[in-house]
Figure 1: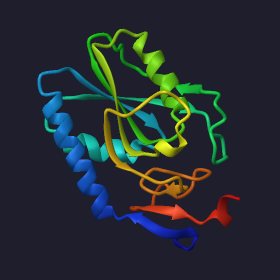
Figure 2: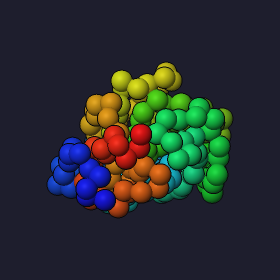
Figure 3: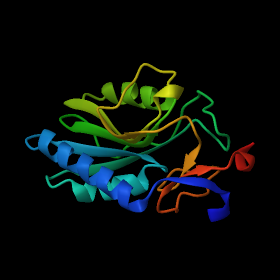
Length: 178
């Protein structure tokens, strides 16, 4: 796996600092609210685990699995719900936790669908934001860092279900996915 990485973009230590900063801000903003973290699987699972440990107020978690990529590097634009939430969202202040906000098509669809379930509020937290690729009118309320338009993997982000277990964020060599 290491040989497939062109360069390390964020070290494990840098990611840890970003996640702790986000957790502190979320804790402050939601201190008197009914916080529900909703992880979009599979990519955000590592971020979600670290983020929830960085939040020092009561919160609940739930998981949703959606697909729009398949094994390619670009979204198909067709969102398929593979696993829906277990909890009723009414009365919760929902924070959707995502690994990367790229085209925004999937997250736009998910956010709008969850809004119909009457949460008290709904916001988005993404570890990485790639605005150069945005195709949908959506932005993150909490964003760890902007990233350039390169194919990054690690810390939950994958290519064809591989590289998620890297402890850092690296740029994948183009010859791997071309």
